[in-house]
Amino acid sequence: MPIYEFRCGDCGKITSHFTRKIDTEVLPPCEHCGSTKTARMMSKFGRTYSRADIIEKYGDPADGGGGPDAYRDPRQIGTWVEKKFEQYGMDLPDGAREMIDAAREGELPEPVKDL
Image 1 (cartoon, rainbow, N blue to C red):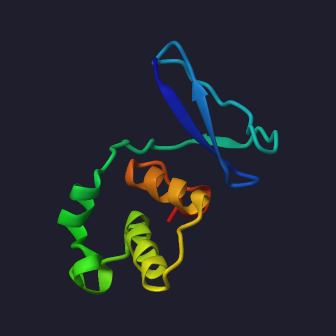
Image 2: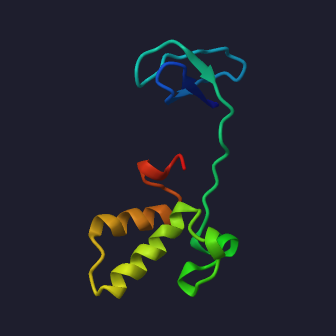
């Protein structure tokens, strides 16, 4: 049972649509603005990366590794944030801790999901 994604021609946001049949031709309305100007997209393939996978690919910024692209992956930013709070002798706020941990598990906060 596939889930198709559609981009709205008016607001540009993405709508997901679940269908029970693979060969069904559907054009659901936008769930954000209600427009019927939606077009089916090629869906992204989801894969969760562990912290070890990210460090292997980009290097460990805590060790100065990874070069200038070390923070290209938004999940790496958490390491930098943790390091800075530690340097300033401050406790990491609970909300920030939750976002960093979630990002390391593959759940990115809304502001960085589309980067």
